[in-house]
Length: 98
Length: 199
Image (cartoon, rainbow over all chains, first blue to last red):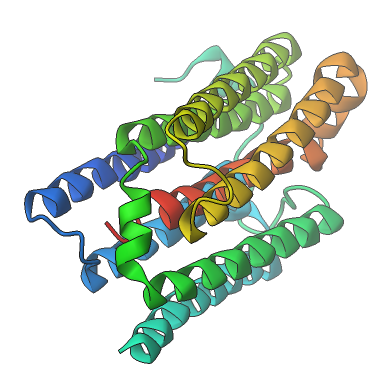
């Protein structure tokens, strides 16, 4: 079934809101376990969720889905650079700290 | 269901046939994204070096307020994208209302952010209180400046409707919507970096 542009946009918004709300659940779960100590898994998952949101905004809200291949590849490269930089910094930081 | 608007809307472009915005705007988006990514890398690194202190300071934030603010931000981005769809469908009057609604949601976002700032300052948490608060006020402050810039470009959209409608209905989405979404991208980064990333 092909969604109309309006419906597709709404679906993108809904997914973004759902991902955003999931942080309350993560926070609740972390607090329930009295996690003042940072959880590596939670941090990496949160960065991953953020990157998914960035890609959805680029593809759906900023219309990259219909853009020329060069821009599509360029924006995917941007998300990949963000992923490597953020996750890499976190992993290196943890290694240095320990 | 096919609405009048859907019927009016141009046939979906095949992949690669429509450049959203101009190249210089995309370079601006890339530059900004990389700039903020580097800010967060610095933040993340120093956080790993003293996680207990960062988490202690972070516990002064209200998670639900941050989530609410983010939902307002994402919704403003959605409304702006709808504005562009409507302009392309030739419904310029409705598109203008959506542009104004985008600005209204921007005001709500800023108001919620100010509530958060005032609450923290009242509790004695300021820019110089600790490292976390320094990052928090710096990053949310610079994000607020972007929001103010977006108000200016939305103003151009609303008060120069003919030029803007031409830009939006054509192949160029122009500076306005790109900036509006850019706020959303930056906002998403800031939230994840400061509120929930390492709970």
